[in-house]
Image: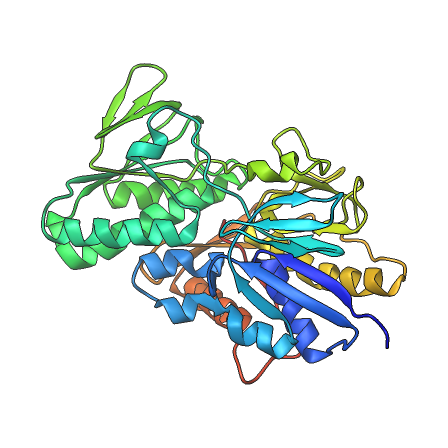
Length: 386
């Protein structure tokens, strides 16, 4: 009897759901797959702003891992990995116990960075998403009762701006002129550093039209119970503070002995494989590809999915691996919370309800691939918002 090869998928991120989908379409009876995820639902980042704005519900924006794993013939373990003993071939679980490993793939995303004093105590990060959504539900309820008068988002990238506009649109619809004041804090002299000036102009116009204050060149150095403290001494008052700054790597990745970059993210080669441990693969935000500098975005995690799935299959069979080549330009569709969106493509920008409808169709098409009992056969286009 041939011994089944073991594949351990750690994390239910955008790349791993594609691995499972492809296993469901073409099962390999010789491979025993285990997925470890702390929750049975995994959020799709592209639809998070719409969820915050009240335009979607949880079921529309989250992929159910249990039916997906069942279709792939995989075992789902609802837990989190807190360490790897690569020499002994064991993954240590947060609730105790271990799982043996042979071939491992990591897609655990990133964790919220707490780069300034008070961040953990007095602010909430956009990641992890489940914790942020709980905080947003509480904030929304308190705002309806008039207990929240000001909300500040720290971070001038696309993710922070989308979340801010989504929260503002939801509360504007619910409270009108009585809604809280909103402000955005960034350490840069302008917003959206990865986007063209035409996109920045549109965003600034929208922020101004909604009376949202922007604090430029304001590096947040501390968070107090009701304020963000900037490096130049500015004290920006806020009843609720959301951090949309750069994220951090889980400390146990580097502690495992895997080759990691200076920030602690797992180093991978063009095949999405660890150069220090060839039986370990990684994708999504937790990975850092050698010789590449693309942003940590859901778009790239989605694009890595098919290559990761193919390379895991080939690795288990002892076959040559494929290369992941990130696209040079990525289409970004930035939701503004009011069933409108901004298109960003290289130097070009466009705006309107039609862009939202386009984005909505793309996002719903992506989610449909992972719905059961039916499975779509091939992926379509994917847009990014983070």
